[in-house]
Image (cartoon, rainbow, N blue to C red; front, side):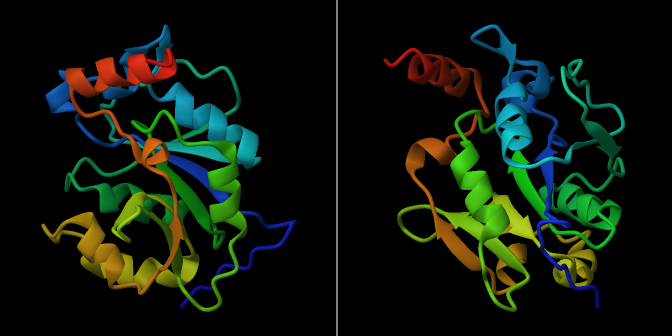
Length: 200
């Protein structure tokens, strides 16, 4: 079993998860325009400010914008279509380092939350996962250590929700606010995000 060693010399890699098809948004979610910028650029900018090394994990045919900064693009397998696939792909490519993941459709994730996930001392737990006010896990915003890779690889192919699969790791949790956890799945969500950015 691999174990992540988090030190100033081996900080986690920041990973934006962009493998979803975005069907409810009409496809091309990463490219969806939010206040004149691609949706994915919001969490990507926060991740780049929080961590030095940043990657985007996406399906082979996922359309991505041109990135203004140095970003690795890791293509996950075409199937299965499950958010766990991107997390496993990131851990496989991280060379034993932990990964801090954030969904590409979460425009209000801030630098402080990402740094808190990256630096959290969680003892022997293989993950620290953001949670809402009721304690529900939000596993698309989390830090995963290499020690959890075997468990997650064995779960590949399951049709169970990501929250249930990640719960098997016995993760530590980090409470975060509702705005941070807001994600864009539909045109209505996108319009609401525009209003939130405008202070409406």
